[in-house]
Image (cartoon, rainbow, N blue to C red):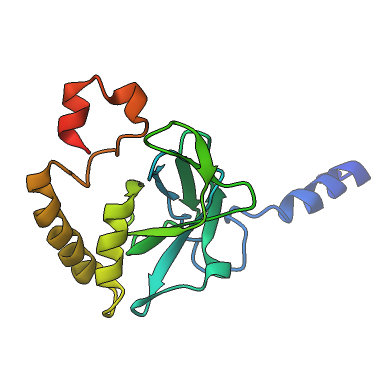
Length: 195
């Protein structure tokens, strides 16, 4: 006959509650979280400093309301970066707006002057890392696309239309804009890529 002590019985009862299953409620395993996507770039009409940046998803052909957009502030070098933790990969609008202390460097004098405008850029699709330059040229394309239902196709068409006019003048919208003419003016390669 097998002798069972109180301690042995307690151990058996505790271990019997630990089944071999993976726990849970019997439903399917949780889906993996999507990888974050990032939109970053530079805002320039001269270096735009401390401006509010909104990166808005395009939903049903229109940008989502400002209050729903991911936001940040440009650095003192005009750069910005925003992440979508939900892994968003559709079309988006980047909007750079004046903030309380926003300035831009005057391209002629190099002095900081108040930045009091809004410039936009559209991107056909956000990817893991997407670079978007917000400039007067991107605003030209944004003005054209915003008169239609906004989707990846109309965004590409508007960017291509502006690029086809500007490229013969030496402006390539896919190249980082010249930030400071005083620093970059002596570099012929930079001057050739962007005015």
